[in-house]
Amino acid sequence: MEYQVIENINISLTYYKLILRIPSNAKLPLPGQFYTVRCGETKEPLLRRPFSMHRLDKKGEADHLEILYRVVGKGTDWLSRRKAGEKVDAIGPLGNGFHFQEDVPNVILVARGIGLAPLYSVAESVCMRDQGAEIFILMGAKTEERLFYEKECRQIGRTFFYTDDGSKGFQGNGPQLLMHLMASKQLPQRLSMYACGPSHMLRDLANISEEFDLPGQVALEEHMGCGLGVCLSCVCPLRANSIRRNQHWKKPSLHWSADGSRVYSLICKDGPVYDIQEVEWDEWLA
Image 1: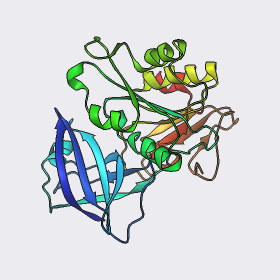
Image 2 (image 1 turned 60 degrees about the vertical axis):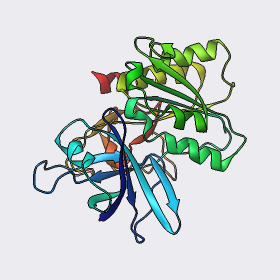
Image 3 (image 1 turned 180 degrees about the horizontal axis):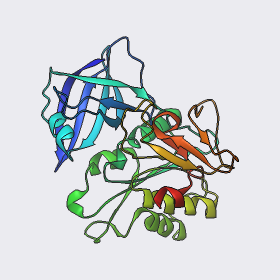
Image 4 (image 1 turned 90 degrees about the vertical axis):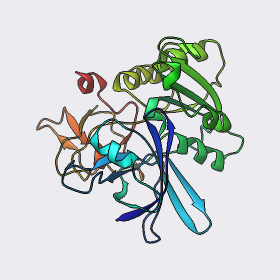
């Protein structure tokens, strides 16, 4: 389906925000869902690129889809050169979105770099659902230069920055900052955690989630071939005894071993959002 470009803004270094007009007959996305975009006018590059829904905005009678992305290759370079009024071919919304826990209104978002993209709409949805909810944002990067969206984050929640070299905010990574905030009692006791970023960061957050009984969900960043569950290129191992199924997470594409001891999930169909305790992190990172 063709989406009209409204704006395509270079917000910092190689980070861009693409704003598309959603066709009137298209389904609206939920936080955590994604789109696959054709990033070229020829067969090169051949495969579409997956992008999470960053924000959903309404301008008059039109719905606008915002995609936050980073230029890393030919496809995203082509996308960064699209101008207002041009069209891009996108398929979506795809996958499962985040599930909001009504009994735990306060949330903490843990992101690194472009991992912020699918989490921002979580904060906005929480604000709409409960104006009294507290929102905490942990946003990090390698250096201060690579941090972005500071103003936008501060507008929606109490924001803590972290950098590997300590050039801004806490020196360390997201899980270490989370532990520091918990130890110094800067966070309420009951929180829901939403995270997106490098797999090693998510594994460490999963360990914290289990140790401190902190409910969490993650949006997995993974290269995809088709985005439709056909090519089997986005397989993720899950913990067989920890599968979460509900009205939001149907998980139609699970593949079980013959003895039922191992199970594999297709991120494009069963994800990209999972309960943080579902993923078999050690095998995923092996």
